[in-house]
Length: 234
Image (cartoon, rainbow, N blue to C red; front, side, top):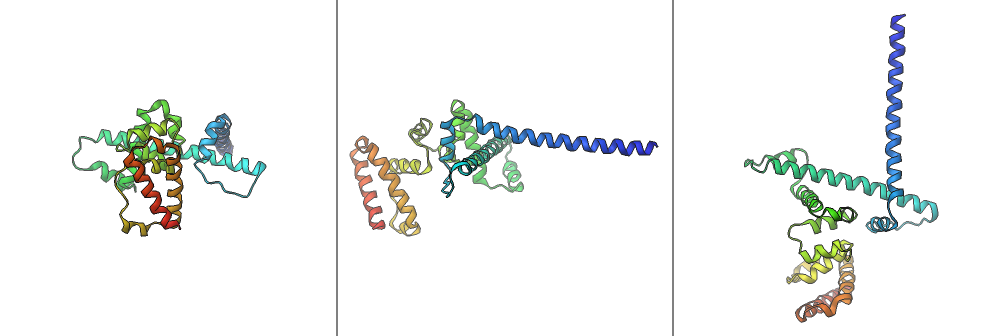
């Protein structure tokens, strides 16, 4: 009889664990659903702008896929934040270690140097610009890497934080205008047609908005760049 009671008790405990696990999953799903409901239309637009959802769907299906995209964006952002914070803390803790143990550690975990330092820079940027945390998190990940780079010009960083620059294409176009180095002719062959087309559109857009603000030397540079791209495109 005692053995039977133990078996029944074990079964009940097992069922209880399963029920608790199901409740946890339900709470997590509910939480993700609440996150989607709680964001503003402006935040929703900023997030969805990062993704090319060129799908032949309308109505409820389109809205559903947008909601799912926002959930994935939230999960990805949380992952990038947590990884960045872990790498940042570990690097700081091992900063006095001179035998390269930090690099050996993340390599053994399967990470490469560039992604690790991009995540560190991104997290450090979020910490130093905490009032803009939500804006930075809603940026395309590639743009957040660019703007958090320690070598990013302050002028470009300010434009991203003010919302004037919202995409990587716009960022690169603005950066292109700031740089004084021209693309060597031999590198032109390495670009695809679409690269030239997108670059032309981005630079044209920026130039049309702020052409009069540019110095004479930069005006000449913009005209020369657009002329070169037009030759390739035509």
